[in-house]
View (cartoon, rainbow, N blue to C red):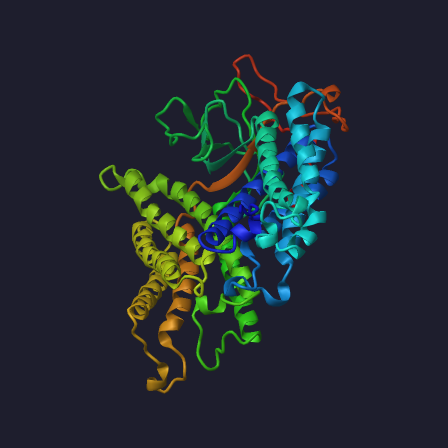
Length: 539
């Protein structure tokens, strides 16, 4: 007897599926948020009202948040780590919201497309995704009829059409993935993601800068040019003043016969670090209070380790989501820090500084992979895997921050160097305590007459606190150097004619670039005057 295919929620209950779902959906949700942001700029470049697109973007981003919740929450009373107690049903509600928002967004997107043969497959995918939502009306009956049990077996007369529920669910996932992939390939040409460094500009490039401490902005002012680094197709190599392909921003002119993409949205290196620090503080404080309230930890009796607070709902849901997302954001910050430090380090160590800096940051990337494992796998689910992830994170970052602080000591301010040295000593000492605990040693402060707390558990807190300080000092050490930020780049040319675009009309005054006989862009272009509004801080 063949059984019906499982629902996605069933496939994400038992390991390793549950661990992969928490990591994968967090990364996919972050990527989809970036795609939605790019769509926002494309719409207003074609004349759609900015306030309408801003509301749609907010709704779409809330769908990305709910997608992360789908990955972080598994529901099954038979599995202790997936028993959500009073929060039962949050997984299904988040899944319905995520799929519903994605389908509505796809339907609006195809409605705005011009009528052509290329838009027909997209319309078909959006329609199929809408039809797949019929499973929501059958799902209650599916659960009542024992899906996956004897009555869900093929050939059982009571099984009937319920076999279509998991098929429709997986088909819906496939339809939406294909839609966004095809839609991006057809309509999003000219958009890219890159690390931008102030001080250099590549040939055929005009970009715009912003204040170093700016948060996510959607309105780039036209100032000094920057060059893409790392992620974009145009950034396969490092800029050099000796290379004719690259020109210093302080040069006589920009040898650009055309106009390149402009910066649409960005996050500076310091802002990325600030986001990571706030996520750490918010997650730890929130889960500490919730775990104390529900009795999971008793800090007045025994001070808990960080992992002890992440074993019961809702603290385990929060930690899975925030730790996995924090590892991703911190990785983006460390890539930015790598480019930030390359300028001073690439010619050191007898010309091997560039490669040595890459190897140094590889330690941090590997440690952050360990942090992602900590978020995806709770202590009560797999103690060995969780402990391996924690050791990778703490151990490799003790080495990384120590070497990074030493390398930056000759150019950083004395106050920054002193703070980094003090924080590293705390981290190294606490790391030794964590290593002792991993070997089974215990040291109670009762013997010292201090209180009934486990000192080795407190080392974990001290180590994490020291890392948040070191993360900031490693960036502050490069104050005064060319800044680096992660940016979304978009086309700068004029938008198409309104005749080819449904439902919107372009403004009559569109900023375009004028070229001199020598081929230089005299006026920095913008995709649309609407980008100059105060839409920038809405997201």
